[in-house]
Length: 166
Image (cartoon, rainbow, N blue to C red; front, top):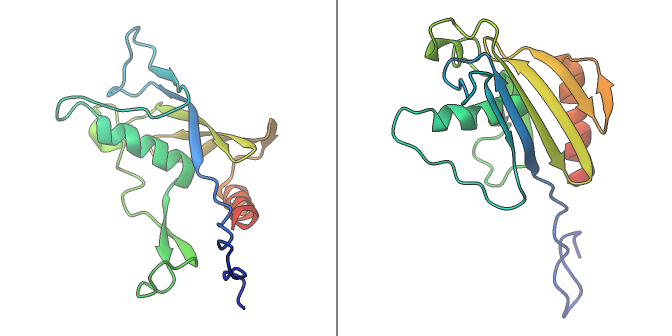
């Protein structure tokens, strides 16, 4: 019997999966999201589903990309074997638009723009801050412990999370 099969009459064990849940998002000094008071976007998410609505061109997809890029930075996951359906093995490859995606959408090139997100992943809390002009990591906190904000430490931490929940 393999590890995924269950004894007769029992359901197979489900994988332990913990997706990031957004708790708070702040975007400062980004022209696309000036906020009501011109101090940027600040939003605390309540438990449940959040729906983002708006007319074309208002920034819905850019907002979702801010959340994605807080977590992935200037990289994208890519399957090691693109023909393996449901592959668990991925590598991170540099995202070609990382240096221009957010900066090309505003007149000042997102020169001072920062995005900060707070996430819960299982029982863990993660806070990430990045410059939007080039996705440089500027702040990193894991379970209330401030860490050195560098990509090597970030991706090492991501691997630890992945291993804990696979």
